Every structure is written in C-alpha cells, then in structure tokens.
Figure 1: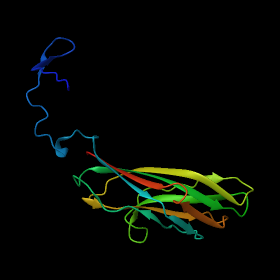
Figure 2: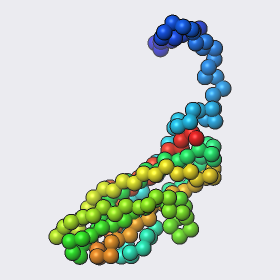
Figure 3: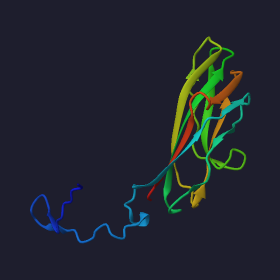
Figure 4: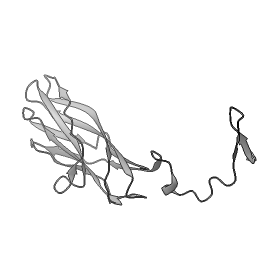
Length: 174
C-alpha cells in the first residue's frame, strides 16, 4: 500500500512563519521550472567505426534531431568516444570537437582537444570525453563529432564497434 503525507502548512525552521501548500505543483510546466533545472535528457548511441588520414576535421557520429521544449534554454552536450590513433613516431594525437549541425555546414561549439599519446607501438586506444554548454537559439538541433589526426600520426579512428560512441544532450532551463 502506498503512503501519503497530507499537510496544509509547513512551519519554517526558525519558527517565524509557515509555508502554505495549496496545490503548489498543479499546473507546473517546463516553462515554469527554475533556471538550471534539467528539462529533458536524450542520448544518442552509435556503434559505427569512422576513420581518417586527414589533418582537417572530418564528420564522425551525428545525432538525430533534438527538439527542445523551449528555444531559449541551453543544451549541455557530452560526448564519449573510443578513439584510436595509428602511430608513426612517438608524438601522436587525435583531435575531437563538438559541432552544432554537421561538420560541413555546422558550427564548431568547443575548442576541441588533442590528448597527447607517447608510445612506441603501432596503435594507441583510449576513451575521450568532451562536454560543452551550448545556446542553440533554435527549437531543433543536431550535434556531431568532428575528428582528425595529428600531422605525425598515420591515421585516426573512432571505434564505435568496440565501445559505443555516446552523445548525451541535456536541455537546461535558462
């Protein structure tokens, strides 16, 4: 059996007053949530492999359309991908950045990152995570991962088949 607590008032901690509780939550909408509240969370999962030998950003995984509840809100975008770099020396790297839209026609919304790998082997594997708070100013948006290799490396890969790539979008009331 489910329990219920029924009260009409709550007294403040210092005893100086009471808080009336007459239907405080009835009629609450996402528009009335306090600033900073999480409105919705959507996660895109990708198991496709991507490869490049380019030093310029190329298209990686891209989300489907994310429809916001309120176009004035922000979106916290978090990306996690299994990145692999084929080495050709002991200074090798792979860069990853988040784009609003596609790489070809979208906007890069973070400064990207290049973890530096020191190795004398042929391949280096590692998970890489990026996170950015975006203000898209539109009620629908897609996000993409752009990636490339460092000029010394021979190739760079996103290995979705070995560890799913995830792009998580959290709409934040603004």
